Length: 112
Length: 113
Image 1: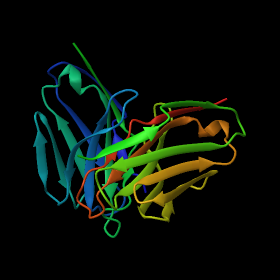
Image 2: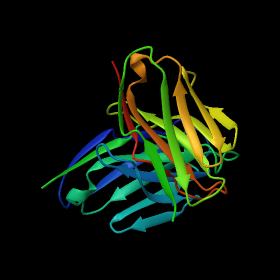
Image 3: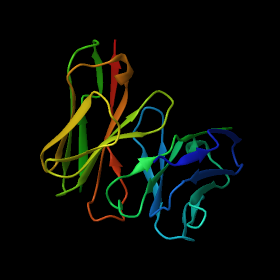
Image 4: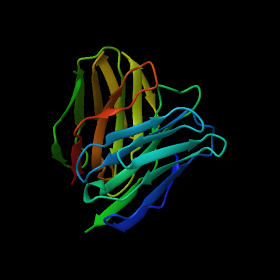
């Protein structure tokens, strides 16, 4: 079952912050985050494996709330290069390492 | 290092024609392989995945099929294309032992006319 992402789209000014949410109706084993530029392949950002785990990559970080079955991606002091579509991918226990399903994506546009 | 090749990059096919998209991975063995489809402005829909030669799991009933004739080769096929088959098709691979990210090919943009 596909995870649900919100919001569907975000428009920011350079330097502003954004939060993208990803939720599932089922217990999750892991959450992946990817960014896709228009017409290109999605590129891996980070993976969270444990409830409560948080990770960071430059000014992009994410958290995984296992109890709430959701993850959030935080983009701090956004840059023009952050523009693109962000996808969360989820794995269920028992399917770990096998089936990886993605949400509908969040389109992020950062303006000067 | 591992690389993934997907071709062709673009394809225009008439309704009712067959389809064959190929994906190969280099530099790894026994990868998990995936086919996703992305309609314009939409999310990534998982179509098929494979954990080994000849093992195919289908997620969405449709007129598409997949095959894995070799360890690092994954093929997406259709006997008769529909207009609704248009989209951006992405192949991806992961290590089969879990805990790892997916690496995507550059995609095939299919337009059915």
